[in-house]
Image (cartoon, rainbow, N blue to C red; front, side):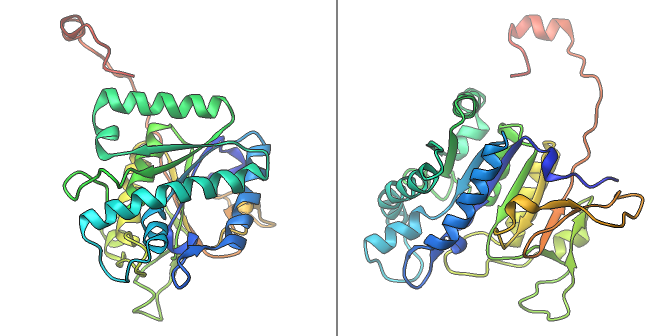
Length: 299
């Protein structure tokens, strides 16, 4: 199959993990890293792309502001830290994007917002309107009200739900891992990087490890789960570490191999691309069922 190219993608979701955004020792934002990311985002925005950001970091920022000790937080402590951190996180994104003339809009969602139809459609309409205004939605789980029973618990799967909700072309997961390997690289020095996944197999799932840092609640397991959600909904997914080359994921290589036509994903670090195949067909809705409900089954 031909590898998709970033230059052909119009609507892009970028997920930023806590371990990249926040310096775990200082408990503050990595300002130079964020500035470089914002510059790349601004370039994409200037090319007419529609951008959405799913950003972790509210709890990490909140615990820093509140000077909470290291270690696992109780549910109410996490909720309180998120209440403080969400304000700081929204301000940080608004300021860094405004330097490039871009307006940011905060969107806080819960699991129910992507599971219940009416709330799903409301959230999607809000996102669509922000994109129409050329604003960049900055989305996070509303950790102040989410409980262990009704939460995503990680922003990888949330980002995948947002990507499918927004009918995004590609979801880019940026975190403290530099792509997919055939074994956890932190435990196996011989692990090989997997640049392209055309189908998520049991072997791909078995290669996933666990969260690598205290700040990160996700890990490769949740990224594979996110890939299932995204690709099932028709969204390509990229897993990557280094964001300096965010604008340069794709290029035409000098020598193509026929199937891939020389089109490859590249960057300053390692990336893995998990692709989707769009299946076309006809959906038939029986008239009696449609008349009985008097509602469309489609949004």
